Each structure stands twice: as C-alpha cells, then as structure tokens.
Amino acid sequence: MLLRRYHHRGDEESPHSPPIEARGPDVIERPARSASKAEWLAYADQQDPGEHDAMTKEQLVEQYGG
Image (tube, rainbow, N blue to C red; front, side, top):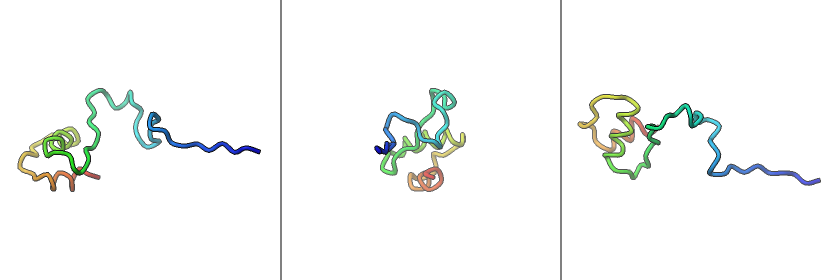
C-alpha cells in the first residue's frame, strides 16, 4: 500500500493565516529582523497606528516582532 505524504508548498496558505481576501490589499507582512527601520515603522503603523518615530529599530522588533 502506498502512503501519500502531504508537504507544505509555498503557494499554499498557512492554516493559521487569514484568507487572502480577508487580509486586504494593503496588508504588510512582518519584516525580517534584518529589515530596515523604515520597514519596521511601516509595519508598526499598520499594526497600531500612532507615533513610532521615536522608537529604535530594536524596540520596534521587540514590540511588533512577535
């Protein structure tokens, strides 16, 4: 008997992520830890609109990096 293994492929969605339609067109994915401060500022503003300019990149990563 052959057993079929199911592998996660990159084109499939994670079971924990919302459907693409629910995310909307302006959703920014969490940046990599090595991303620029500007990318982390954009992500932080999307998650929690407000003033984040005074925060360092390390603070942004700690608070919004998950």
